[in-house]
Image 1 (spheres, rainbow, N blue to C red):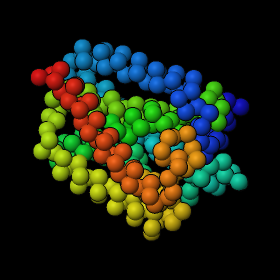
Image 2: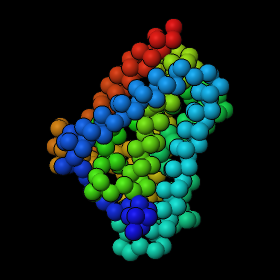
Image 3: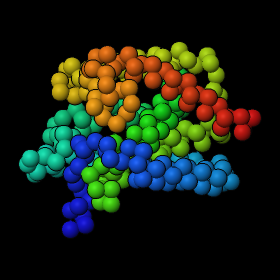
Length: 263
């Protein structure tokens, strides 16, 4: 029964209105914060070789959890009717291998950028990974839903992956892998426009019902997020653009704090 409960997507489309900055949300935030500080303090005391081993294991885990969850979505597509959520898809589907959502793209780009040392991508990929990971902490729709005490594979995947999307870039910035510099803003702008264009390809040509990067309609309408919950679809893109711009600025400043510690 436990395995059956674990390998399920039940509740994934339920917005966590009752959890938003409630007790479970604050506990999740606290767990994220404590885990980050504890692991960071432990890891910086290790040799660079041991740090590299840990980082590589974490990157492999990100990819493994991403694709093992796709296996679950494929299984449910063929075996569960009606489907528990809107995510199940057939095996011969573009979602089996790639993603049009921001965090989903970072799941793939972060390991590739680090393993192949693609320096022009690092400023955008690192900051975007941090932003995407923290966004889930602030609005944990993919972690807190349904019964918070019923641990499922998608919940486990989301909590671990988004944690490492924040942790890995910051530990690498701390080690001096890249230096935060204002000259990289055009890298970030080009990267963000490219990801937005990629998301629109998914929205317009792959799945016309999709809302990748929330570009097509406002998913927060009538929800718990102030301001966004009152804006009609279409107009919400203006607010999202402002929020993302401010988000990148804050993440940039936050990342510089880690860089200064190693200077």
